[in-house]
Image (cartoon, rainbow, N blue to C red; front, side, top):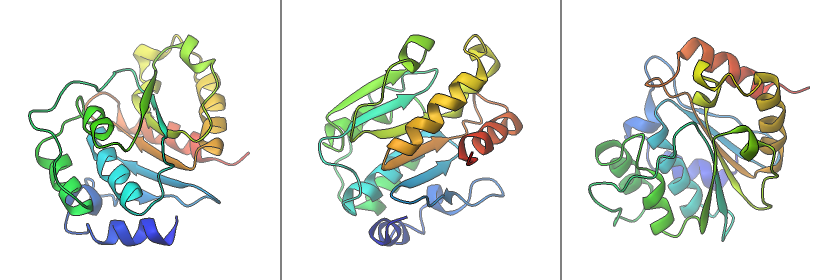
Length: 191
């Protein structure tokens, strides 16, 4: 993880989304040249994107590649008007939910576009250069088993290796957590 991103996250420690998830702490998984953040509910990705934006870790003009069985693009009850990571964490915890966290990030200018990946045809494409990768592990839920798991793991590992900034949600509302953690380990395993 970059030092700037860590400092931005440290500024947000009182925020529940960055403190404790159930009995687990949220994870920052350092890999050379990229920041990888793992959370439970997908709306917390907004807080990580804010930390990356304010620390200068999000690539300017990035496309968000959103891998999920849901689009998560409903409009929120209120738009993000705050500044800084603390404000973003508060907003993610008190305004956003798992279905509406992408539009405020687009409106804030953190991304210029979103590419939705939710089916086999989408997975067979390439990830645009300079993209931020956002994975909801519900892509591995039984309802998505029509796409072979090994194929999803292979493609997503390659995309993780290409992205400089990655968020991954375990999605307890949509995914058995034992299964989610199994696939998280598969994605993070180094071949």
